[in-house]
Image (cartoon, rainbow, N blue to C red; front, side, top):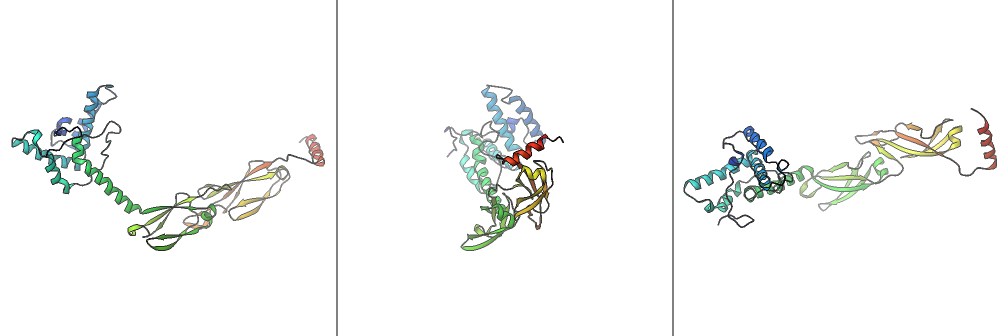
Length: 313
C-alpha cells in the first residue's frame, strides 16, 4: 500500500538537493551558502503577499533542516538511494512502496532533535514527506531526551518553609517508596534552593526538594544581608537614646546618637542570614530609621517646642 498524505494524494519523493541546487556530495559549507542565498531571495518579508514565494521559502527551509543535519541527511540519503534504484528499474513515482521502506527502517531510527511541528520559527510546518520520514523519530527523540533529563535532574517536590526556618534550618518528614524519611533543610536556604535526597525518588532516582520561603514582612533579603525598618520618636532622633530593633534572633537595643536623621541606616554586623555552606558565618542586618511625629502634644510639650523653635541655631 502506498503511503498517502493528509490530502489523500499519493506522496511524491522530495529531492532536497535539487531544491537547494547543490550536488549530492556537497559539503556542509556549500549547503549553508546555497540555503542563505535562496532564503534571502524567497523570504516572505521580501515577497509580501506572494504565496508561491512563501511556499518556496518553506520548501527551502525544510531541505536545509535535513541536509544541514548529519543524522537526518544520512537517513534521507538511504531513502534517496532506495528510491533511485526503484526508478532505475523502471518503477513509476506513484508506485514506490513507501510503507515497506519505512517499516524496514523503523528499527534503525534514532533521535534527530528539532521540532517536528514548527521548524521555521513560525513560517510553517513540515511537509507530509518530512513528517513521514522523521516525525516519529523526532517525537521518539523528544521522549528519550525528556527521560534522560528526568534521570539527570531526578524528581522534584516543592516544600514551603517559613523565614525563621530558613534562618535556623529545619526538617521535613517525607514518605516515599513506602518508607519515611527525615530530611534536613539547612540554614541559609532561599526560595529556589534545592535539597537533594539521594535515591528517594521513584525507581531509585534522586529526589530534590524545591524550597519556597514564605513571605516575611519584617525583613527584606539580599543574599545573606537583611534590611529592616525601625520607627522612632522624633525626640529620640533629636536627643539621642536607645531603640529596640527586630533581628531574626529577637529584639536588641541600638544606641541612637543625638541628631540622627530620618532614613539613616545602621549596620549590625553578623546579624543577617547564615551562609548556606558555612552557617557559622552570617551576613549583616541593616536598620533603616523612620521618624514618628506625635499627633498630640501636651501643653507643656507644645510650650517647650515653641520656645525651641524661636531659638536660632
